[in-house]
Length: 583
Image 1 (tube, rainbow, N blue to C red):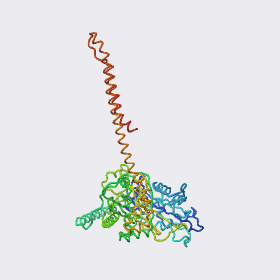
Image 2 (cartoon, rainbow, N blue to C red):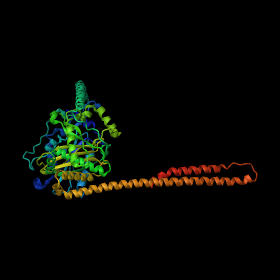
Image 3 (tube, rainbow, N blue to C red):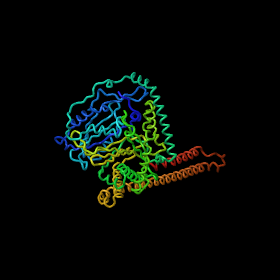
Image 4 (cartoon, rainbow, N blue to C red):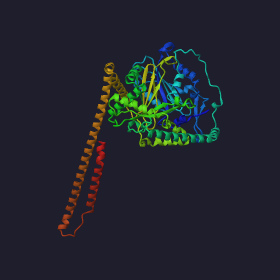
């Protein structure tokens, strides 16, 4: 039995049905390299089961401390069943890329069963109409709770379930973990007892931690005042992507040749990460421009930082921090934008050793009894709308192995990581390089990005624009056809968005005009009705006046008719705008 670390517990405390705290990956495999050029489901199942014996963390489940007084524990599950965690499905015909993306987005939006080991895998067949794939390919989608692994730690899981050759030389012996006390379900009494025993040391640890944070903040403030540190990059305009999110997700991805990215980074004198961020910034600029929503100021992005090299290996599954950097989406020229992004990234790295980087661990430092209700309140009341800071996306870069990987003998031809969506951040970009390719995966909230295929076209357009700017005519000649196709799609989408906006304004104007006309007619009818009733009343009282009779007031029924007519006219005038809107 092992207690979760502070950052691991943070993702458990942030777990919510609307924003499940899980990451994932989609690998596509070519079975032609397997023995017999065919892979059966039971082969993949046996491959997983054999390798998970070396990863006991994936055979453990979560055990909560009663009353949420302390961080939970990992306990080896004696009832672990690999067949529950690995499922076999197929795409419907025709089995194209769009259907695969929809299926993956649907699977990624579903929360994990928190009473079992926190991961699932899906073997997906029927990839029959995806371009540039060998025939018979299948996909493996994995979903893992973030408390188990971070982006860099996920690579150890990826390496554990893959081989370096189609037919590995190791034997197929089972490596079941030895029986031990941690396999037994700990009682509530034991968990509460351990919590009470740790109360004193835990309080001392919190006190030292708070003192360290206060000292770090003070040191950071002094460095900022002396201009040793650059200005913080935390103020940015709001956009559609930092609004409260819903339950549904969209997934899209775009692959590029790694050699082409290296050409761009060499031409610019930068890193591959700088180029990838530049492509994402260009795509977001084009997407928001097409929807007439591009802010006049630069958008900001959050970027996870691997802290293993700085803090060393610890018992935590997650060793991750975060930094913020401007994307300079307000700059039109791609070269100037890329240079500004490079400077923003360099400035952001200056804060890696400050307390700001460790802000992601804050939810884990609070007992679950407090943190979980706060999370539910934050999500339920959509408090993101009231946050002053705006972050438009998360961008993470995870380098993969430079060699081929095999699953049950099938070679992995593509891999796309999936991140997680936060309550007020509905767009996540993951960059992954492997096997001579570099992929940019996009996970988004479906309400905020209802057209992910158009965003993929924006990624294409941003890449071609940057390539043409850095490499000149040669790049234009190489990608001319693709650029024309992508540019045409972007322009068509922008034209459609403008046409819809004009039509909406015209319809609104017509509705207002129609409502005004109906109200005027109703008022005119009311006046005419009132005059008619008054005239009838005078006509009935005239004979009595001529005969010398006493003056008799107008019949009460006439007064009722006048009041009734006025009420009818008022009702018609009130209903006129509703009728106009309904029409």
